[in-house]
Image 1 (cartoon, rainbow, N blue to C red):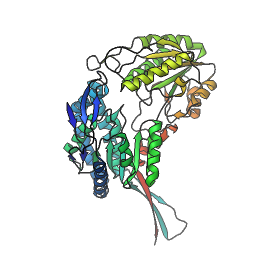
Image 2 (image 1 turned 90 degrees about the horizontal axis):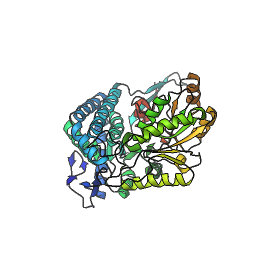
Image 3 (image 1 turned 90 degrees about the vertical axis):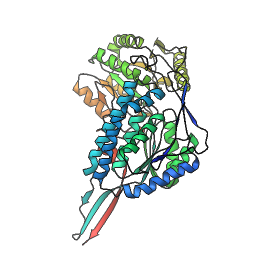
Image 4 (image 1 turned 30 degrees about the horizontal axis):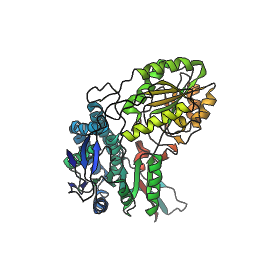
Length: 474
C-alpha cells in the first residue's frame, strides 16, 4: 500500500505519531494509500519554516520568482502522467482527464508568472506642493491554502501560483480525500528547485486545521470549499485578523429562453452534470425553462440523461465516474428521495446502484418548485431539477431568490435578453450560450454566500497582496 509523508522545509519528513489518513479509490471502494497525518509540532514547524523562507522569497525581484514558477510549470508538464495517475486513483477521474488537469494547472502557473513585471503600485496626487504619495503592493506573508477534493491539482496551483509571484510562501493542506496528487506536486516543487520552505504540503486531521490557520504568522487563508467550512475559516481568521479568500458553494441556474438552441443547450447541460459526477461548484444545478419550450426541452434532457452510463473510468473513460465517497452518495440520494416525496417527478436515474464503488446515476427531476430543498441546497452530484417560467422577469426572480451567487448560465439568441440578464443576475459570473469554465484570466468570485474575494486574473493575483502608503515630503 502506498504511503506518503509530509513535505516541510524542502524535505519529506518522518511520521509524527498521529493515526494515518486512509485514502480510497471511489470507483472500487478499496483503500489504496495511507498518508502520514501531521502532528501538532509538524504543523507549527511548517508555519515557522514558511515564515522564515518568506523573508528571503519576498525580497527576490518578482522576475526571479517568475523564473521559479516557469520551472515549476515545466516540471508539472514533465510529470503530468505521475500526477495524473495519483489523481485518477483517488478521484475516479480518467487518467487522461487527471493528466490534463496537471497540464492545465501548469498553464495557470505560467499565467501568474507573467505578472512579475505588472504588479503595479500607484502615484497619488497630494494636496501639498512639496509632497508625493506612493501606494505600494506588498506580500502578506504566509498563506494557508485549503484545497478541495474535486479539482485538487488545478486548485492547488490556482492558489499557490499567485501567492508565490507576489512574494508570499504557502502551507498547503490538501483534501483528505485526494492528497496523493498534492504530494506528487511536492516532488515537482523539489525537482524544480524552489527554495526550501517556500511551498510546504501538510496533510492533517480536520481538527488540526484550526492549529494551522490560527498561527500568528499566517496572514491569509484561502479556501475552496463548502459554506460550512467557510464559516469555520472566518472563525479562524478572527484569531489574528487574517485575510480570508473564500470560494464557497454554488447553485448555478440556467435560464432557457424560447429562442435558445435547445439541442445545444440540452447537450451542454447534460455534459455539465456528467463531468466529474456533477462535483463542480459551477456545475448547473437548476434549470428554468420557458413554458413554450418546456416539454420539448425536458424530452431532450431526458434522452441525454438516460444515455449517460456510470462506471470505472480507468476501464472506460466514456463512463461517468463515482462520487467522492459513500457518504456523499447517500446524501445525494437522500435529497432525491425527499424531492420526490415533495412532489417532484423522476425522469431519469434516482436509483442507488448495486456493486462496489460510489456511483450514482445521472438523475433528472421535473415538476420542481422554487421552495424545494433540491432547488435551494447545493447537490454536488449528477442531479438536475427543472422548473418552468412564463416571462424572463419571473426566471430572473427565481434565479436570484437564492443564498448562492457563484455562477449563472443563459441560453438565448437575443442580445437584449443577454444584456438584461447580465445586468440583473445576482452572481459573480454569467455564461451566455455555454456552460461555466472559469477562464484563468478572468475573475472567479461569488456573491452572497458563495464567497469573499476570488481567484484568477489580475484581481485574483492582487488578493495575495496588501498595500503600504508612503507619504514623502521634499
